[in-house]
Length: 153
Image (tube, rainbow, N blue to C red; front, top):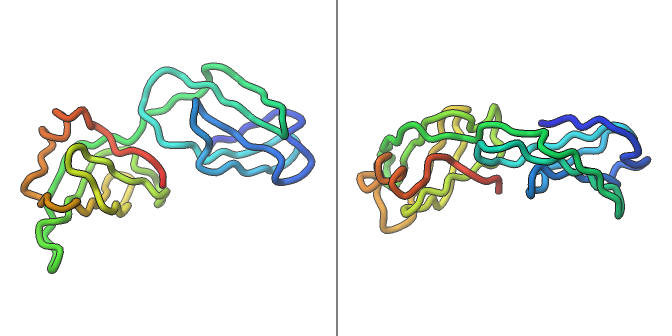
């Protein structure tokens, strides 16, 4: 969560919204005329991004002030579980969040039908048909250019 402090954010709760880079906050919460909090969107690491606060039709932008390292996948492990035998994999890594923030994994070329947050360092992915866990390797994920989990539902 990012705390934004300033002035003239509005006198009522629903009047202000925030964006980090080109992405709207997963949730903007008005606190007062001088404070809003933004549940930051998931993003990859990279150059600092601007923070934009909008109140009614007016916007204020502070350039190049926010950056962070996004979620990163470090390993893939199979999980065999009853009727879903060989359809579940566990992704381990870093930066998946301290609480379930509706993170979803998008693993090219396999795809995840559903993602379950387990901890800051692990997620469980239910593979799309026709894939099974034996198909998925970290090398294949990296070869496809995927090195991170991404997105908030």
